[in-house]
Length: 345
Ligand code: FAD
Image (tube, rainbow, N blue to C red; front, side, top):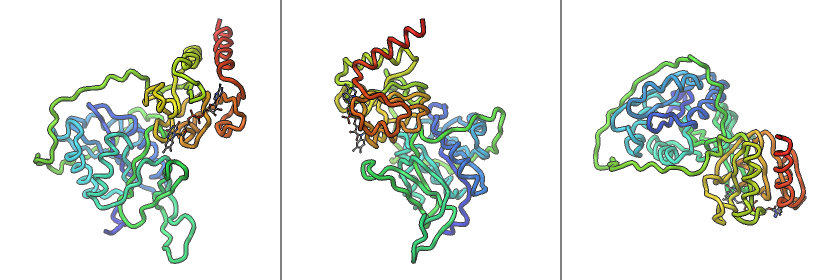
């Protein structure tokens, strides 16, 4: 493999039912950052059936080029035809970097494709940048420049690992939704659109989809909320979450929670913030009765304003909080809600 042949930053533009997933726009934002020091282009790979019209949206969010693989076999996501499509694009166009969202689809597709094109993949990255490998020069190890440095929590979130892939191409990574910033869309931007179809031969490896049953989510998307009122084990019971819901209602926010709350069966997993939950970046994040374990803060520390309420003044949540209130949440939260409602009258 001649590494010099591999050029450009590619992203997998995930779409479902011909709607581009937000993760594609987030990946484009990051891809633009990575492409600048490499002085290269950003390419979105759009795979599906009758999806060509979506290319303009990708251009508005930063794609210089869109490679469209359009085929009836790609109408719904299935591992085999999608993996064939993406690995064929990689073999044909030879990207230096290939980013895939760490969504349910991406977690299936990314590793399958990386194995097929014989390269490595760093899963579930929370930070990506271009730099030198090894980061600190080491005797006997050749220093390589302009490598993709992929950072992710490791060992159950107790440490942060930065991983590089200096000897194979492309450098592949799946990226957590909600972590990377999309750019402000450039209205009317156009990308070069390239149509590519490697040919699909249905065989017994192609799963047949009998029926698609859509789950109707009863919970809100906490990644879209501007204000989150998040509760932890300290809230004490599912019933007591009512006081957090009252506060959220008073300020136009939504309720989210720590993993302890989900593990106790108090709230559904969709509302969990953190390493094994969702990464959120609201304008205001209330952490109420949450101790601030690293696995929790990994999912909320980039919020604009963090307000923590905890009875233990040594709780680590105060290390990431902008405003800390030490005291009993059962007294503070209802009082805060009442004062806010009074001020609104
Ligand atoms: P606790 O740590 O029990 O904290 C409760 C807090 O409430 C305490 O600080 C206490 O002082 C305070 N409190 C109690 N009563 C009151 C009161 N009346 N008024 C005010 N304060 C009060 N955790 C996540 O949240 N998200 C994740 O995605 C996640 N992923 C994980 C992944 C792995 C691999 C592992 C090992 C762990 C993960 N965890 C995650 C768990 C994490 O380590 C913590 O156990 C969890 O975040 C603790 O939740 P908590 O803060 O609600 O509970």
